Length: 247
Image: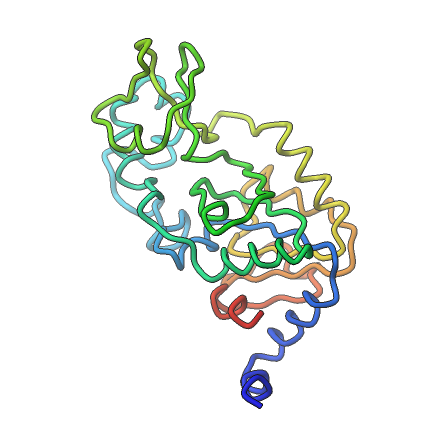
């Protein structure tokens, strides 16, 4: 009775979304910054996002490879202040996706996020298009270092060999990892349901990956309109937490 009452109070689009998830055996989730905002992590392009805050240099410039190479100390001031995801916890969307994976329904998560929250929630098959703050490597010897070391250090973090440590994140002017791109294309092209959520779908080449989808159901969940709304079977403009908590 309680479940029936809850169902009648749900948005019809969320009810349809539940039904599509239940009937789909091969789901892929494609997510952006909006997936983690309910954990407290700011996004980039909203009015309160990182790109609309004031710094000595524009965030787009700070997060470029040229800036990192020329002014690593300034880069790390911004990086430690704004991109430290270690202090955040997964939200209901992260946990529900991990649950769907354990059930064998969700085959992969393709994410533009670098915060590692999907793995923290228990997801195993996570394809990180833009890398992760959890991985860091020495530019001189290649040794990997923990995020705790990088975020807990002062100035420019350095390896035992003296080399500069760089986060394994894709900066502006850098290319995406071809192996991750290929795995993402393979997962999306074989899915029968693609859920695209928390992304404006304006960042290329990542957003172009959904053009490889050939399955039955394309679902877009985002508060703002996207260039792909007209191609979707279902568009939900609700918070991700509300949508996924209904699963």
